[in-house]
Length: 337
Image (cartoon, rainbow, N blue to C red; front, side, top):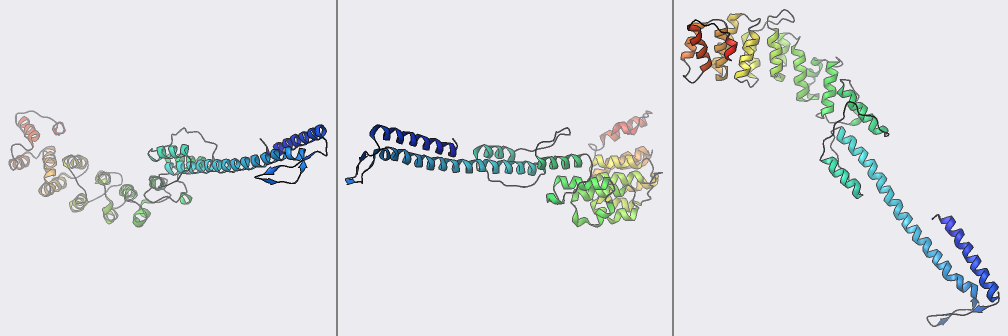
């Protein structure tokens, strides 16, 4: 009920009751009442009747004021919690650390669910009615599509996935060269530096590749190997340089075999053989790759000699290949690895 209407209604009721009593008893009729043994001055009967109505009106006004104020603060808490929930959703989408204190139980429940939920944006997500959320959705969509976005106003950490992806996008769009990133390594995460090194290794000369070799990965190594004596972006590299690069990685049997296969395309057989001879001496994981290299290059006698240094349980598939070859059967060595 509106306060103005309530006041006008109460006033109209009091005037009507006062007029009716005055008409019934007369304007001069007065009465004195006692209050806790104390007699009050005589007052018109109409006034004595209307006094409780007036007191009830004042009490009801205070009652409505109290609950109006209470409702105001309650609704304000809901509004603030809604705004905080929107901020929390944006922080979740941006992978930012956050902590919010919600005052209303419904929003406390939603916040608890959000804190234990990972959020991602679909490619076909529609815009909302909230401009702040729409801006974040556009940023996420742009980064996901490979565009470079200005993230300064979002204050994201350097290791934030969005920051990392945005830096990768800058590299891919040539907005930021791989060499610039490697030269300012303190400003980038290891993930970015490794990706930059992979891009750099595709065209850089060998001395430059060695300069930043601390960021080498297996993918970067195979990019370098593919350039050895190749027709495009050719790279002349010594065994010593290749060994130094490999020492920085943890390589297993499968890696060494893949390396030998890659080098079989363009590397000179003599250089390839010497490389894997050294690798086999340094790492047992390279033994099979050395045998594969020897058999692939038809160096049967050398392969036999190396097999004699191995136990009977080792290199069984290569022993089988050798037995078949000595029996007059010719099979591709790649079928045995």
